[in-house]
Image 1 (cartoon, helix red, strand yellow):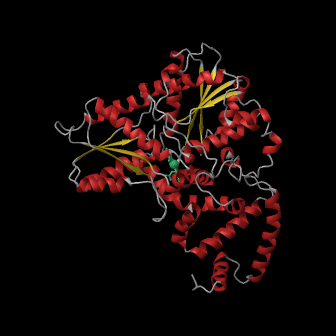
Image 2 (cartoon, rainbow, N blue to C red; image 1 turned 135 degrees about the vertical axis):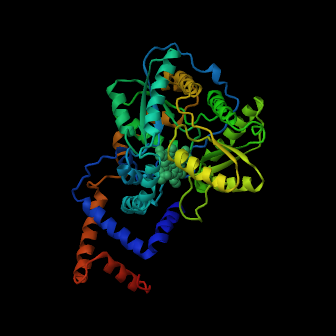
Image 3 (cartoon, rainbow, N blue to C red; image 1 turned 45 degrees about the horizontal axis):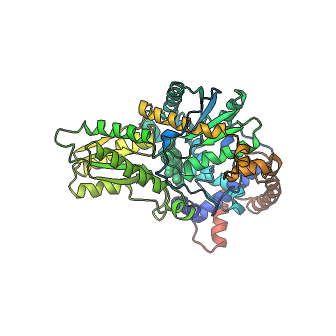
Length: 499
Ligand SMILES: C=CC1=C(C)c2cc3[nH]c(cc4nc(cc5[nH]c(cc1n2)c(C)c5CCC(=O)O)C(CCC(=O)O)=C4C)c(C)c3C=C
Ligand SMILES: [Fe+2]
């Protein structure tokens, strides 16, 4: 189980019993804090999560790969009403000082760290805090090593600007907004602006070419809740969950790959091995939750290889994954990129062109992991030429592809949902919900909500119990009322050696 594995990871560093005691103590502190203290920080997109996921289990969305869609025939509405375009991404800390809080937000995401609902409300925030604390130092160092700032938001802002122009070129009055999952601007901030701007139409485009529950899925879940709970949320909205197979994306990628290949020493181009890399994902997402990410990554590679071959670059190629973390036994989709580099070197490969296919902006994973760690590993293994293909950024062909993706979504928006029902067409379950009012605002509030440091009914009951327990324990330990003593008692009670 993912959760247990992460617990084990932390436990590995501290010793299981110490960690349990620390967690229990943190939990007491947290719940005690819930008696009236509210953080000065606001993390709307984290706090807005229901404790129980709305669609865990077998009803998970599974995207099928449909090669038959003729994208060129979509679009063309002739409608001049302004359209909101909401770009979704991960978000990055602005400075090294933000790192801990940012990681806390990441690990509060139930799509990243999933706890059983029965204990989630009690342990999730202390556990997220604990993991964030234990990862923060390395993450801060990594951030400092790339100049102390992640270029992510700046690039997305430039992408948004460029998209506005590309949409205008297509006759669309697009207003482009940004929502990042774990840092500002959060989805709530973006939606507030969209509502204030009075937009009636919205196309949501995750800046992830391939769909994963852990990325686009998580961000869309937040927006789905807002669709039902935010007055003024654009009445007509559409999502493009994945665009890894769009011709514009593929040709922009090919262009960048070929440019990088041409920087290789003369004569080496044909010999170079193209190593496609993608962000890793715990195998459990694919095997147990039906995450289509791995399948879409593999399809991206096949399509890119096909497109490159058509331009005379039918080089040997392979696929590997990066960014894995956690304990050894947490299985990730593979192979891992570092293992693949070693394997290629063992086979005598001397030129490697590494292509990141799941990111569309530079960030820690490209600037630190690829440019420093993988490049130095490749050198030490005897690979003489190692070239990393840049991410798409504001590449005009790529921005054009995204603008086309938006244009293609417009006919969907201009068809009111009731029209579909009246026409007797099949519609999504969401649309049925809309019309049967399965989700009303009141009903939504019945879903247990995660709260920041404020009151929840559960927290109040537990606060009472935990406060009593804490008072009892501190009286019993009045000679030495410290965590160390609590841990010692805990270990003694379990018949363990002293820590
Ligand atoms: C189990 C944990 C994680 C999964 C699964 C995951 C999937 C995933 N992530 C990206 C792209 C990015 N992730 C970023 C940050 C980030 N992601 C995780 C964890 C998981 N991601 C963490 C803990 C963090 C924080 C940084 C770190 O400690 O590594 C970023 C932003 C980085 C930056 O701007 O500096 C990106 C981009 C994809 C595509 C993906 C799909 C499976
Ligand atoms: Fe990530």
